[in-house]
Image (cartoon, rainbow, N blue to C red; front, side):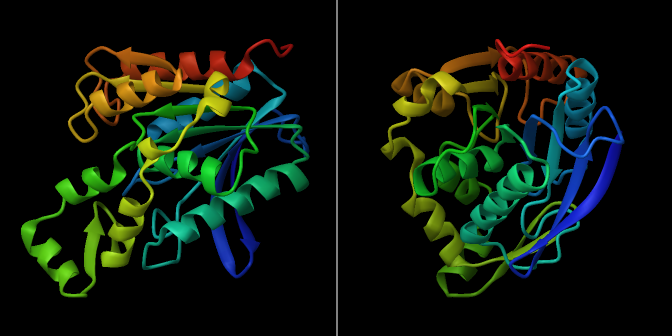
Length: 256
């Protein structure tokens, strides 16, 4: 069963997409949060495929995807890291209080992966297990490299620019500086390492595999290179492999 709803808290309205097996169920022992990458949304085929596979295989699990600020159907116009982290806190609290989740998991992609890793350090770790696909370990560099010279000059002059793909959002220099100020590689993740899995495509041109591979090695995190996969894992076979590995990792030794 799939449904849409909004979480209205703290003056925000977070657009959510929810997957569960039993449409009559109101509480779930295990809830997986699903976060997307920069310029994307909760509406990707990969999100649907993950949610559907998860709840069909394990009926005591649910998947809760949501739009980051300024993405998808979200009402906000100007992107900030702090609001992204606030959204994640609100969704975590909703899963624990309203869905009565005993175990929280998170599956994050690209920009969502960066935010998840930053959340662990700046806020804390509410998750039993964490799966990252093509995480933005060097998020500042990835963002800077995909800005045109004209846009970068505008930012340096204190102006806002419009960024994104299907949907445009406003960004200023403070957003880039915030990304640069928090360098994932300057922090240790040993305390979380056993509960993190990273998958990355060998043909990822947006976030080259070397950065996440080195990060995983430095922190003794399990790392799975997916041969031939690009950044969005556009090949259905690559996405199917990633989903299989992540669901297997999340389920672990929990009883079916």
